[in-house]
Length: 298
Ligand SMILES: *Cc1c(COP(=O)(O)O)cnc(C)c1O
Figure 1 (cartoon, helix red, strand yellow):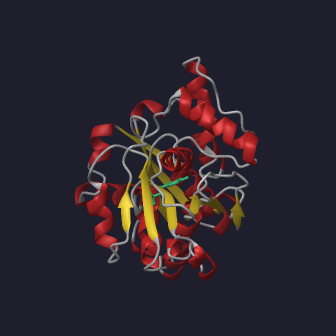
Figure 2: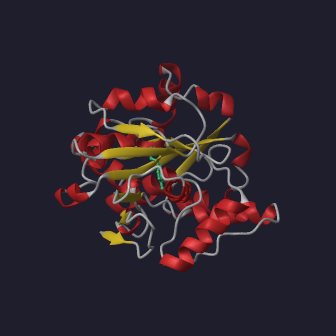
Figure 3: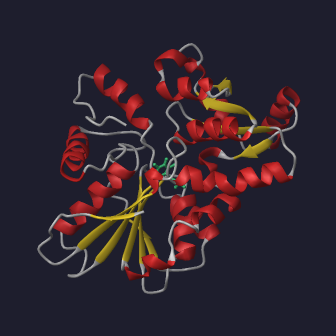
């Protein structure tokens, strides 16, 4: 569903937000798109168990746990950080995943880095038996195929399509289905120059660019400015934004508009990729640091 924002900009720029966060009450946004064809494939291969990887507040972990339960799979989450094993109760994401029946395997950060190596996977196989593997963040060819369904024919009116970037899977699907007169802008939620190359593996089109100035210090990092922006945006537009991805992207787009980055009359589409479950965990961390929290009830 596309929702045009009522905000008036001086140079006739118009903003519309694609509410992918409303796709599903739990598996919202791009994680729903990324799982769609993976789940069909797992069924086609007659797999009973889904295994995947993620961090403590991962939207992907929450999505896989819920989708597995809904569709009759067992699920296993390999979680980064062995210090978390006795902190499930204080972590809303892990608690939710556990309630969905996900079984956890907590691994040290060092071990987690080896997760794509054959020996690591062989270990998991001997421990858990046969499973359908979904990579960290859910990005693979089937995920990108799902994300190619985010843009539709009705979206051809837009000049710019903006979305948040984590592993690059979502933007790859969007780039593949964008039209030649459109420009796709990606806003990485983390630091690092590797994303450009990751995305190039999956796309042919050249009409895209990464805007790397709005990661706010790195993955999962926020400041008071961002929190206030998210709270204000909610009051003014009744649209909740998550602090890890979409909040940073929308902040970035607003800032670029102020800086006259976009030509007059640009018709801009923002992709709301969901991730609202992350607000609970972020608010716990903000409270601990005695910082203002996100005043959104989702
Ligand atoms: C995972 C996620 C992203 C990033 O998607 P990638 O395909 O990994 O780039 C963006 N927004 C939200 C809300 C997410 O949960």
